[in-house]
Length: 216
Image: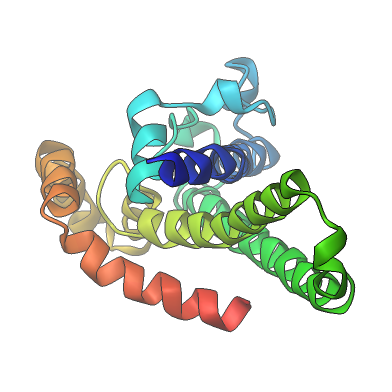
């Protein structure tokens, strides 16, 4: 029980970084291509509080699958709505992949430091320092995993995930219209069913851990 609480406490900062970068990237790219909606709503910020969705954040911490509060975007304000919608939607997942890579670099550097410096002096380290090192490793590992999971999860073509808007931007207009109608009606139901039946986890997590092993 205490171990679980310890891991959750060290995981929370990594989760906050992941969702903040994800939503900020959406808002920044939308603003860059002509839509100030996120900025006017106070969402063009790196303050994680502005982006928290209580349920989605809790699910991210516990199940490693979840969501933030979507950044408001008016696609009609974009200079080229159909093409720019794809760029705005891709910005979140791509930013998470970049952050996962940066966490992976820190993790590798951390391992080199531990192996070459600290592991030769373990007897001189206090219990508090050893606990901190363990927590720091959990933070770095979570930073890689949670960003990869958030990126891949959001690429699924199911509303309200980013993959929906990417697919809408790719499909021919008539198909996009039909897809939007169906996904708007049943999308959230389908998403929740896939999450709580464990289907997404069974499909997604093997890919996440495979990429994790490549990164670290």
